[in-house]
Length: 357
Ligand SMILES: [Zn+2]
Image (cartoon, rainbow, N blue to C red; front, side, top):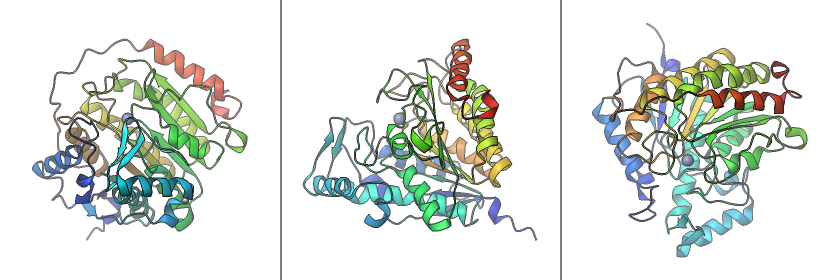
């Protein structure tokens, strides 16, 4: 009998993620998650023996403090108690404190089940998202930084030492960058549309102090398709991983670079997310026995998000299932601008990475 439990995929989910509601007109809405769970069930992914469902617990205050200041944690708790606003786009309705802690707990569990070898890789189907939350600030629909809490959990609980975060959400993860900006043990790599919220993420933001060279931003012009990711992986992510040698790859998996996302303008397709996941899995296979933990960030097209996530899970689990694009994809443009930007990134980082010299 073949023991292949460790080859399977973990899906982290809690029904309470649907309880966080920012109002009927807000794009970060419960249907993102409920629609996805329903779709995963319809295509048989939820019942598949290669996809294991895990139910998270909320992160404790002590755990939140691994990343956030106590003053900021208290601020979210107080705002949440009476209902309020964190920033103009980020209300704090009464259940926020509890559900945001549950979201963080989901990301931590996604890392934990991979670290323990219960599954080979994982996907945390969580909300609210986290990558815009820094040590003492939030915004952009984010309260606590889920992916950073995953990393700190892996560091303290599982004694891991080197982490690579790939953030393919269409927005720059300014919070994650803020948290690890001077930390050489966390290599942060972000692709994001520019110009777009939050406005940070230029090529010259490379980290500071001990962390100089460990923060990598590749801003993408509007209209860029996911096809460019093949080049990005070959030219930047793979060489970085080869030198950095991460013990796990964590992905801030926001699917708002999709071509019909209502709040951004990149042109990724359902199938491209599948391909990108496969590329990242190959890097994880080469350096860390396939250890790959992903956490949902953005993604606001309610028709496509469930399919994109299904495609990612199909890639992660190796299931033989085809997920179809619900719309006609836009024509691919020539991506010459990306080649130039990749050269600029290499130039900005050549001092720190042999492969870029
Ligand atoms: Zn986003």
